Image 1: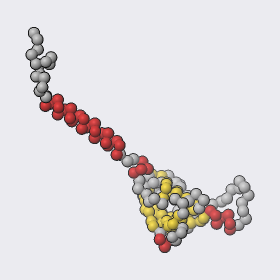
Image 2: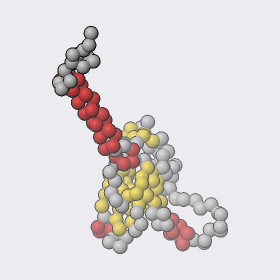
Image 3: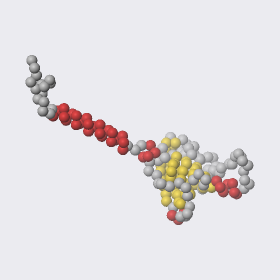
Image 4: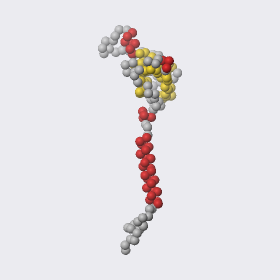
Length: 169
């Protein structure tokens, strides 16, 4: 017997509403998945730091070890100070270390002071907890760090601050 309305028994010009609704739902789901992947921001892109700060470690919300080093890498032309848990850390400039005494011999080790250290050649401010420093180690829990930074040409009077938190297990 020959099918009157096509091979599947449906009339040729008729649309099956159930199949149309399911197809539309699947298409919409695929579009939303693709949109979600393309607009998702993760990792370093999700962290909002001022344009003056190019990179920092630990980043906001990171978990670190008790002796973790704090590193803030600035754009050219900035200086800064660092405050951790309400303790203002003294800052030593690397160029002042070499100009205050005799010039170190090539390849010689230079002992860094137990302060925050600013390297003007690389625009990096860093701090390493150690026995003679104001902070000898990071205790377990949350820590609040505040960096005060300014453009060298504008002066410290026009400084800004950036605050973030990190955790020690």
